[in-house]
Every structure is written in C-alpha cells, then in structure tokens.
Length: 277
Image 1 (cartoon, rainbow, N blue to C red):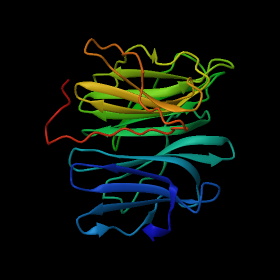
Image 2: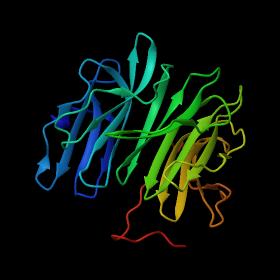
Image 3: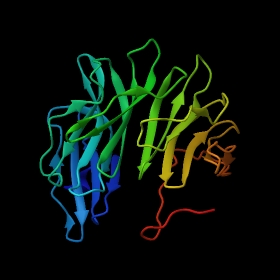
Image 4: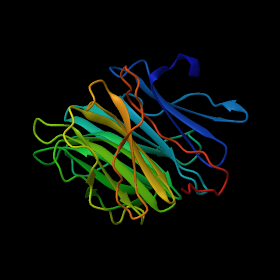
C-alpha cells in the first residue's frame, strides 16, 4: 500500500531509535485520507489511516527523541467553519492515534501548521486568523502538557511557518505580506524551549516574492533557506545566525538560469557532534 500513496504530499521524520516516520495524503488533498507508516530494519509497517473522514491538507510530522517516543502529526482540516490547524499524537508507535485537537483553543480559523520535536516536547506553529490580518502563533505540547500560546509575527499577512528544534533551541521562520508588497521572510530563535524569543528579523526587504521558508536548528547555529524572486527567476537564498546572535546577510545559494524553488534543510553529523565554524 505504501507504493500507492500520493507522494506529492508526503512528509518524513525520524527519531533516535532507528525508525523513520512517514505521513502522506492518499488520494489527493480534495478528498484524500491522512496516512501513516514507519520503517525500521524490518521494513515498512502497514499503513494506518490517521484521521478517518476528515478533509485534510498540509501534513507535517515529528517524533520526540526521549523515551518513550511519541509521534505527532499536524495537518490542516477543512470543516464548515473554515480551515483548522489540527494535531494528533501516538504513544504506541503509530498503531493508534489520539482524538485530533486544534493547535489553538481560540476557535478562530487556522491553517498551515508546522510541528517539531526535541526531548519530550513538541513545538507547534500555525497561521492564525483571530485578528484582522493573519499572524503566526506558537505553542508547546505534549501528551499531558498544554503550553501557553503566543504570537511570533509582528507584521500582518503572516503564514507558511517552518519550525525546527534541537536540545533547547527552537527556530521559526515564516512569510509575512504587508499590504500588497512581499511576501518577505521573517525568522526568530528561542534558546529556552520557546519561552522567550528574539525579535523577529526580516531576512528580505519586499522582494517581488520571497516564499517557502525552511529552517534548521543546531545546538550552536541556525539556518533559514527560501525561494526568492528578487533576481527575476526564483533562486534559493540562505541565511544563518552569526555568533553574536544576529542574522547575517542572506546569500544567494543557487544560480541556475531556471527557477529553483521549495528548498529543504537537514543535517547529519556523527553522534554527539555539532557544527563548528
């Protein structure tokens, strides 16, 4: 059944127990099913339907690194009251899933959720419509923990958040569209598990379009990449946090002559190693 899924909507995550976690939408986002499977040395587990009967899109997945491992899937569910950013958790390796719950209890429409995990904690960000203009909100969550939510964005028209976490560091980036300009990419870092955040930094300045940010958190570094139309055709740009905690000037990473879009970041280092420059 894994070979029959719609790979255009698949998202992967992994934990430290040699297990790969995969979620995807089978049948397309108009009327598809949210599915889950995992892979270890024995192969892929049978696919499980996670949210029966729901109209879902934009899935994201993360797994805690502390034992016992918990898997979290965030997705956008469409209902009579509009879109709602939703989360479900599994504490038994993906066999069964909790009743879905909204990322926010506000009751306002919400969309485009992102989820990350470190230690025993899940971190959630989403596009929220409780105000006149959309903003990006953040909270922490666990099987028996509900954290306080807070607004990360300061410029309206915000959405498409990306999250990553490592140890106590959490990195977030998103698009913000002030009026008819942009969108621009904004980013911020927390070094205490999301309790306090740096002031959001605009990494672009009203380029024709800067979109689709992706973030990478390391114990001593943070990176954001995105697609940028300031040079004409889309190219991928990259920015990092300097040793003093400020964001360095973005650097153009691709020069392809054709559009380069939807970058994604990941890191692979020997066990216990960190990036040093």
